[in-house]
Length: 410
Image (cartoon, rainbow, N blue to C red; front, side):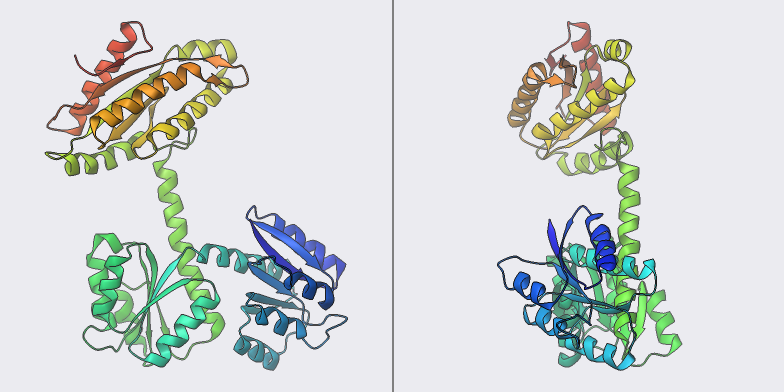
């Protein structure tokens, strides 16, 4: 959990900020009413993700609180009752994250959104590509202020090398005019590689005519900014593009997960199972296990579907303890599947451990004792469907033969 330091002399505003901060499960607010309290907190051994401060405090009426926060390298957002353009520019130049006026509830939400972005940025990698040492350094310093993990390159060729070494980079910010490979060539090369299809790419140029902007976006960029840019505009563009990408990932994930057990659904199992099948064919081989909860219908009939749902959730969670490195999920109803490229003796060892764990586990608040039947196919087949069908048939044989057992061969 991340601590957020809130420095505000108004009790009402403190309560509002405290509520909004603690509504986020990742945050804990630390409240201070004046400069002295804030100084005591910041000089303790506690670490703070960020600070939200009012400029005009009873014992520090001229914004001294900002200097205090920045001197301790705490990212700081200023929330104030008065807007002053000159003061805003001074504070931004000093290094505050943003200068926001207390105009409405939206202003407070804006601050919380900014702080939550900092949390996400701690694990977000960004690549800056610019052949100008000055511009490159400025952009890197600006992004680090917002807690991004920042890498830099000075042309497109170097950028591609870094991208291939760091496939988890989420955002590229690239200048247009560069030696060896310019921004247009870089974004085209990036979009031709399926591994980088979801990468956010923002183009930059000091020559900000509309044709250049259109050309960048037609080449595959998500957005374009002309230099010099305003602090707020740059951050808003970065934020909006990252949020759009995160929303897309969330939608994809939701489409891939079984809503009850939060494991992968049948569609995802087959889509990614095909990739595993192709990868494993002729090499380590792919093993498929089909698992079925024994006598599940009687649980629903006796205790109701709510208890049945809870049982399936616990069963899926137990699967994660044994098959976390494999591809596993809910195939349908009370039937689950595991696809593994591990050495077979290791896989079957965990299968048998899992069967024993199910026998010994007490499911739901009713402390139900269960068993499961499992069929496995590890022999080489022409298609994934054949592997699944054979494993499924063996699972039904296990059920017909008395349940609570594993069948590996016909």
